[in-house]
Length: 207
Image (cartoon, rainbow, N blue to C red; front, side, top):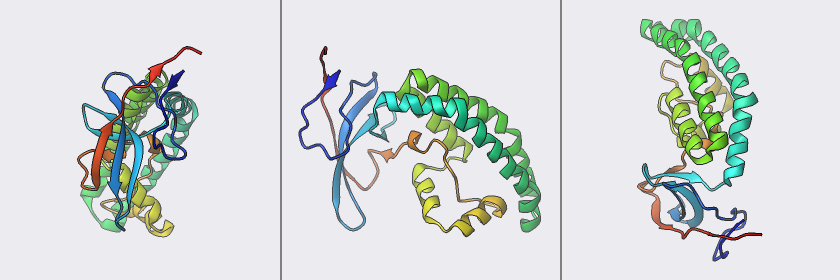
């Protein structure tokens, strides 16, 4: 079991774990738009500077396994149907040959992304941190590089506008991330980040 003194941990934060090489626990201080300052523990990938929600590795592995076995196959059936609907509708609404060819490309690449995401999910079941990052990258690429923050904006928009944008807009700004918690929260270089402190590794103790 891994333990670390509670220090000034926030309610709901998980016990710290010894992470794989290249990953560390950090305490991040960031500001809200209303001027409030919040501190919380997150997980940082040292190579990229990407910040992730602090979740136990066992939880991440379980989520990856669920994605691999059930969620991803169902998601890609729906995803394919949406883009098959978009092909004639977006082309007619926008009267744009460019839109038609963009949709053909999006449909043609679906099986390759499905295989890549299934691989990342299965990898994450055994290597949670690395698999999480790989899954997040592939899914962001699937949505043309959109970020978690843009996915959060998707949830804030009205249902009518997002559904219409999703099936008819020539430059669809909305996205639905099936592996939302696999996505980075942001980076340590984000302007609202005030400071980040790397926490010491927990001490392994035998029970």
